[in-house]
Length: 208
Length: 208
DNA sequence: TAGATTGTTAATCGATTAACAATC
DNA sequence: TAGATTGTTAATCGATTAACAATC
Image 1 (cartoon, each protein chain N blue to C red):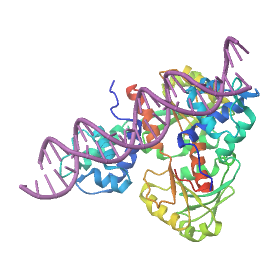
Image 2 (image 1 turned 180 degrees about the horizontal axis):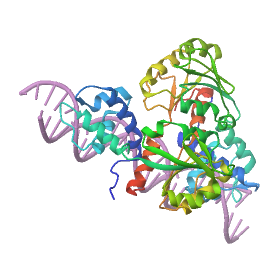
Image 3 (image 1 turned 180 degrees about the vertical axis):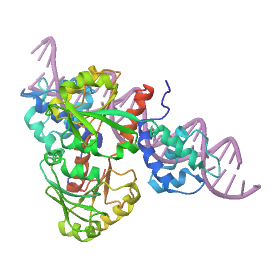
Image 4 (image 1 turned 120 degrees about the vertical axis):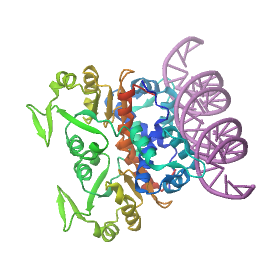
């Protein structure tokens, strides 16, 4: 198993580097270019690039743009296609099923599950099943990632079922901090907090 | 102007505290209860609560649950209703317009803008206008928050227009690090990075 | 050679965690 | 009083930033 040599903070900046570099046409890109364009510290950018790049940067020139783009896409996993199921096909869940952007990021949603569904229904090209069938279907589909968009009341219970069914990575859109075993990873998408930061800024003008 | 006395990290944990406390029925809640339930450090929880609570916690008992719930909802801005426009009404934009959960969080999306729209169209109860009309309409609506769901190529240009139209807070779903003046706040919702964390974990098993 | 840019080592900063005193 | 829990002060940890040497 390959071990990641960079932090989550670095990973979070990579998409921004990638987009900037894809918008350039020069042979090379320097950390200073990137730092200036993105409003980041130059050393931070350089360290991020060094952690991800397969070729060292060159004095006086910077990093070769194209190989670096490949390395970043690789680090972000854009090459490999992941399959995921989504649990909770309400407004947000339906939205995410329909969201085309995921395909570009290498994610295919292969099935949905929802308590309200009795027989199978379809949301565009994605089948949605009753949550009862989760236990059976997930192992058969051999899917390891789940997107959790159920309401807070059910989140932990559904999470437990997912783990029992073999899910190893959960993208959690609920407002519950999930309890999972050590070999399962959870990534929280905390919309309430994001919104609160913006809302509070508007009402107080405090930018810190 | 009131100054926020807690960090963004604290703010990000508040929704989880809130949900846990709302699921209880006891008179009081202690930091240890919360820490155990959520898998957090006890001192961290205590400091978070102290920063947000209007009443001090009491030795031997903890914090009074109901007043604390009120304080957290207040800190998260659930009481006040914010209005926002959304720019870029593709799949993700439409999804967010339809997402009912925002209402509970105190957000109302009052209008959308999209380059593809000529005359006014409606997505459920939300009018969507041509992006040309952004300049005029945003000041007239007196809206200060915008949700940005345009593609990367247009993100900075649209951002500039928004700022010119008086927007002060931007919820950025694009993969561009936006350049804004000091008096405008941006919150990045970085789905590519979130997905990359999960995807990488699945492919390498590295949980650090 | 001079200068731009990298890469590395050390300093800073802020958040988390530990230790412990205060209080009911 | 003893014990549970708070609140505070100090230590730790990790990420960011600064200083600077190496290199083309």
